[in-house]
Image (cartoon, rainbow, N blue to C red; front, side, top):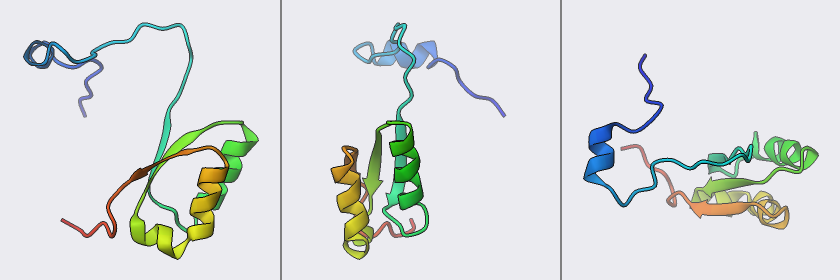
Length: 92
């Protein structure tokens, strides 16, 4: 399998206004989680993030928020960011 480490030169030339590299000495990781909240993994993930004082972004599905409103409130109360990942995430 082939993975690009940097965007191809052609892509960088087509979109010169894009940010194609960031030079920093900071050692940071950005965590994102999709399709939640769900009863199986969200509480476990929140506990692990709290243990390490880490923050994440949760891209939530609307119907899952309705079904698991307490988990969603916990995501917010714990200081994580949330994003909209559709209401019902139909296939296709």
